[in-house]
Length: 160
Image (cartoon, rainbow, N blue to C red; front, side):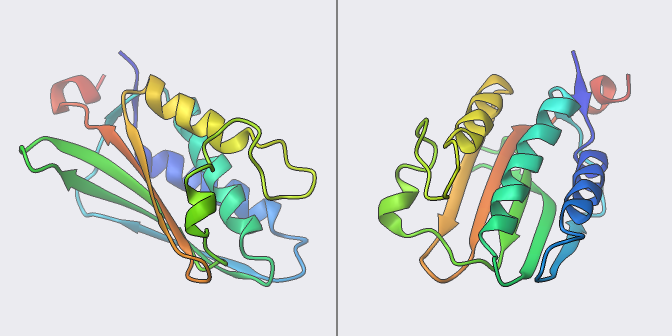
């Protein structure tokens, strides 16, 4: 089994995203939030990094006049008591209109000039492979939150 420490991946991705924004005409600020207790998830750290990178780039592109991108890691407890890790990316961008939100994970769907429409499709496939799920909450003009939910690794497995 391979395990990822989301907080470490989160820090690496934020550093990469900050570098990618160095020459941007409008500043994007980054905020990292974590619950006190470290969580471990089952899955490849490089795949998790790809997910957060793709989501982070999309968030930055959704804020053409600058803004704030917050990456938060929390525990998510489902109604039946199962504990998962939630990694949330929240931007202050233009938001996603409801009619677009239904299509954003479809292959080749894009609203960006020169976009391939594959970034979120890849994100969805990686999360499916990791046994997780992704949720989106957004509205036109109000920013967006992408929540990646992954199974927590048990403590005895997560240390090796």
